[in-house]
Each structure stands twice: as structure tokens, then as C-alpha cells.
Image (cartoon, rainbow, N blue to C red; front, side, top):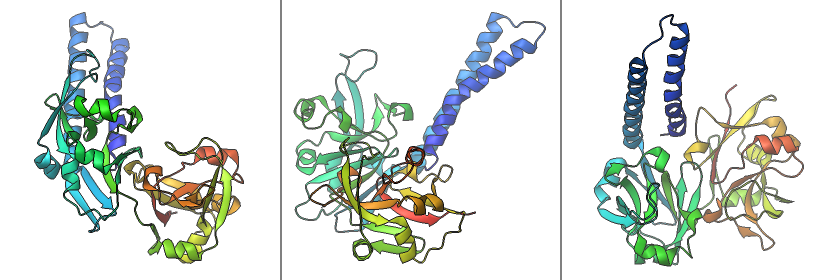
Length: 346
């Protein structure tokens, strides 16, 4: 599952590779193949591409899980694909989603979000949940709306077929045309989410693993606090103007956890989103950058010093202060939902 995005890219390249080999063959041959032969080879390439894509889809589904966590009585609930399929007994029609005929309704089958919420005991006075996608996209809905409209679903099928990754699968947030007219003003198209991997109820408590040490809010409050104003690199809900941020420098977090980084070493940061946990594309920050420009993890924002909520990627977000060189801020990702810091292997 961690390599889902990489597999997707490779699948998109398959057809190009076959076509490249075909062109190479054409140039190398002294006797040019007939049009019929060329078409046969193209058909074989497309068939192989479809075969590999289908095998990849099946493999992705076998590994896919949905995690429910946050302000619930239990720690977390993890559903595998078989369990998601078992709960997927809600069928809906959605108008205006077809790519070929805007008037043709599309059918979806999936699990009602209201049913998923009934699987966990939500703590009192919690009124919203946030969906988190593989690519770190997030979308927040009010719990009363989800309970009022049980046809808001996480879809596993579209028009009787498994949803391809290129169409937002394998797990896609969607709702039918009836509540759509009421929900669209509250939840614009930017709230639609694909590749759903997590549902966070309310706001998660701060919990950061640094090496072998687990740090919580009390640990953060005990450390030196850093306050800066800067334009942020996060997507969704954040202001495009400078924002006041409060947090703790990463070098102080390393010191608190007794983590020693080699002089020419780096740290790896991991977020909740799977794209930020990919072992083949780790989020690496050199120690030199950490020390030179006070890279920090923010816990609070705004003039009223509010905790960063889940809907904005909290409780921990990665910040590059103005003291960082512009190329540093451009080269590194502004992570949301930061969960782990680890010393990179040499």
C-alpha cells in the first residue's frame, strides 16, 4: 500500500514502453511490418497493460485499509478490504458526474459513512470528522450531516466495477443527487476526496515518536517555544497571507529524546498520509538545515494561539521559518499530520 503511488506511475508508463520497443523494432527491421502486424502488436501491448493494471488493482485492494481514530473511546479501528466490502451495502445514483454524458447518472456502491461511525464510540460534544487521503488531501464533514444523509458513502464500485486509481479508487467519498443539492453549498467540490485511508473523529491528541521516545503535549509545553510569522506551504484552509505559528524547534525535540544525528546526517519525517510514509521517497531534512534555520513543528496558530485542528492538518505541522533560504523551503515539503521523526541511515 505504501508503494501505491509508485505503482500507479509505473502502470502509466507501460504502454509507452511497449510503443517505444515497437518503434525501435520498426527502425531496426529491413522489411517493414504490415499495418495488420503493427495493429496486432499494439493490441497485444494494450492487452498486457490492462492485464498488469488489473493485477495491480487487485493487489492494492488486498492491502488497502481504512483507519478510524481520533476522539473515540477505543484507540483506533482498522478495517481491511474484506470488511469494507462486507459493509458496502448502500447503492446510490449521482447525476452530472459522467465524463461522456453529463445527464447520465452514475451508480456507486459503498459503505455508508454513518454506518462506519456507528462502529466506534464517539466522545461527547464531537461534531465533525476529517477524511484523509493517500496524497495528504483532507476533507471535513459535520457528523450530524453524515447521520442525516446515510447515502454519503465511501464507494468501492462505480457502475458495477471496481474504481480505478485513475478515477479516485479504490475508496472514494461520494454522495447521491438528493442530498447533493443541500450539501453543495456547505461542502463545495473541493471537499470531495479520493484514495481515502483514514477517518479522524474530532481532533487527535498530540503524539510524536522521535526515535524510540514518544512525546505528548506536556513534553512539547515543557520545551522552549518558538513563535514566527510566515506564509505557509500547506494546502486547504490556510491563509495565503503570513500566519503566526507557535511550536518547538526540531533540534530541541531531538535533544529531548536523546537522539544523536551525525554531523553530515539527516532526519526522516513521516506524516499520517501514505505518500509521506513512502520508504522509496522519504521526507529527508539534513541536520545542517535543521540547525541553520530553526525548522520547527507547529502546534498552535493565529493571533489567538489556537491549537492546529485536524481539519487543518494538525495537531503537528512542519514549518520552515523565514530564516530558511528560499531554495530550502522550495525543496522540502510542508508536512501536515506529522507523526514520526527518525534518524536517517547513513
